[in-house]
Image (cartoon, rainbow, N blue to C red; front, side):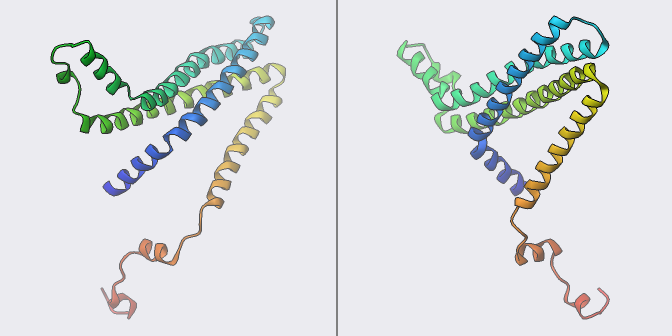
Amino acid sequence: MDAALKALAGLVERITPWLVEVGSWILGGMIAVNLVVIAALITVGPVDVAVRIAVTAFACALPLDVAGIVLLRLIKDVGDIRIDDLALKAFQKARFPHIEVYFPPASARRSLARRSARIALGYAVVLVTLAIMLTLIGIAASLWHMAAWIAEVFLATVAASALLMVVAAAHAMPPETAAEQALKRGPRDPRVEKGEPA
């Protein structure tokens, strides 16, 4: 299990730039949707519960969107410019006494930076998830204001889209090899294969 966690951490580290890019794109799109719909709903006024729920959900999603995009940007920028190295050099240039004590050794800085990026990415995933949920609630409530069946069709379409994405990802996976199937079955006991009791 330890090897699997290390491999997963390595994979996340390698795809972090892609995750940051996709996350920024998603959050930017949600900010635009939230602002456009809030602007339209504010002109309607609090005419019914659906409008109030929609405005509340969008208003709560906006700070999460902004926080998520800032966090993703920090992950990218801190990794690109190596802020620890720059800060250490700046303090050394200013002849700050014993500044090396306040910074980890150079050998540990890179692993600490990777750890920080993983932690920040975890928080960003939570922010993106909450923002998506609130945005979906806001859109559904906005559509509910028009007619309940429109909101129900929207939510059904969202669920169907998510299911189709999972199915497409599952079908895109390569088929199991014979070696993988044998590994999953586990070690064979020759006595069992011959019909003898184990």
